[in-house]
Length: 494
Image 1 (cartoon, rainbow, N blue to C red):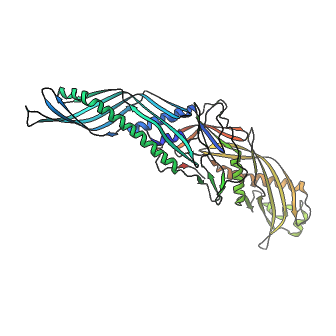
Image 2: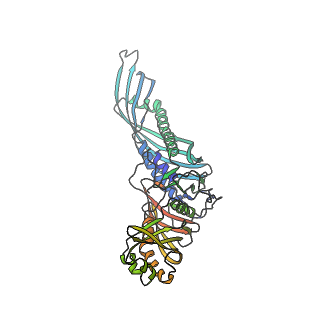
Image 3: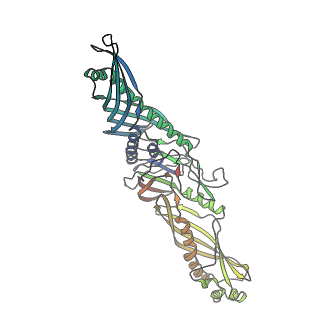
């Protein structure tokens, strides 16, 4: 069976559409494969499995038999090739014993070449002939049982049971004597059936071994940019119920130089709701608010939350003349000088997932700098506490957000130009927030957070659900004309 599609079944982080799954330990990004998702993956698996079997060449078969009135016939069957496979029914089931995939009632067509030599005391010089034949196998059954386990953050796959059983077999001989047909049926039918069973079984074993090696090669950390990495190591063992598979990864952001997990994010078992609001979706990826909190801390500690503003839509604001009625002492001391705003977030933004959206509390220090004779002179600092809501959506395979200002408050942190009238200052800060700070943050949020998914697959008709402290992405999945290469890895876009 093709390892690419089995991998899609395991690693798309698909989630069931109703009820609860068993709790997963320490996974901040979690998911389960639903019955709809399993059905989709099964169909892809069978399609790719057939593609890997068609044109499979089976070993040469040789046998000898005594033919009445003819003599001893030595027959060789070569170039035995599976030319077509048709599947009538299939099923996939999950449970404590693993994932069970069964294909039944399959029809397999084969082509082959035959040749024989006959020798007897009546014909000492021997006779020979050759030709082609076709074989049709009906009622074939294929089954495999696999199990998933976590080994030090890597998902490992083991093949518990597998096999192939051929039902009926018919042979159509092109040319040759009548006795040869009967000989093929009597002496070779079992050999051909065994060759088909062994060939397909070996393909299953080979595919699972390749897939396990592929899973073992997956990275435990993905570099997102110059400041952060995403911990994508698996946590806990997958949990398999009668209709779903639950999988979790760590999912936290870490700094480039960090080795251990940030303190404060360890938790005991988290019970993941698998409800999709009644929507029959293939997947539900659940993201804990701690993921966003870890990102907030990493980028804050990396000094990525600072901005110098020396251009505004209303450029007059960045000249002391515009401030002469609001802060007379500023204009008096620095008449008609240009200014800039040094905007920095003073602590990691506080992010909380509610039942309606994502709330953010952002503390911003806005330092007013006067530019005089090529010198930057800080004259005052105003602290702003911003309360904002963030609407989340799926763009491509990224989860992106857009902040909307709810309210804000200001106070004077320090001043070198005396007291300021904060009510008048607040209107200017409102303009700065709406024209600079929020657009800047929204520009960053538009880049999005990459959801773990196999390269070549895409979310389809995704819906966002909020359920404190989780954001859930309920979606179907589509295959985007992609055939997974063994060298491919999980796709993350920074």
